[in-house]
Length: 212
Image (cartoon, rainbow, N blue to C red; front, side, top):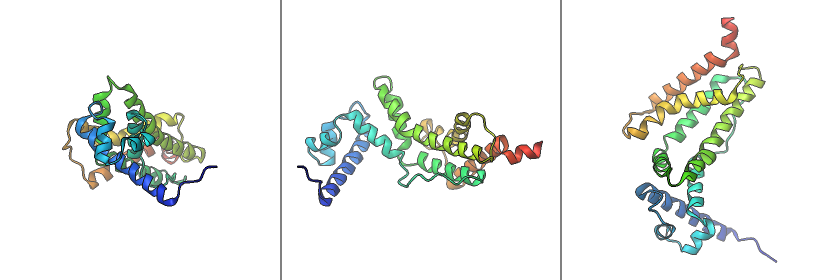
């Protein structure tokens, strides 16, 4: 007969998990993936090695959790209602900007790129745990708009890639080489607005009807 952990023990476990993730993130960013050991992480998080291993049996599993957390908006992912492409894409675009400009996001990508030759699984983790779920949510929204007749798009995958690329190409990727790449709220908003307008002009059925 097994008993469920008490609310207190669940809270303690969550606190220790959060401490582990925070310590691991700091050490990965400061020292790189290869030079960061689980023993160092346990020490920095002030938990026992046994506690760390129970939660994360391998360093790869720990990095997986960090990537997943870094892409988590902290809110329930609610797809914008269909029927107004501008409103829906603007909401998605702003949320994407918020994710890409989070402290540490660019540094996390730098770790993946730097360690990729020796640890290709890091790239797979970043892609499968981070980027793909967000990409799939955007594609799903575009498919819903297509089904509602708001847009005419034959390849939702390509359309989602185009939209996210227009944003990340200005908001995120220059920062990989230029850490002081200038960004402010007004610039970010303009990037989203222009990306939305481009999508409307390319795929919006209202714009296509006007041209016809």
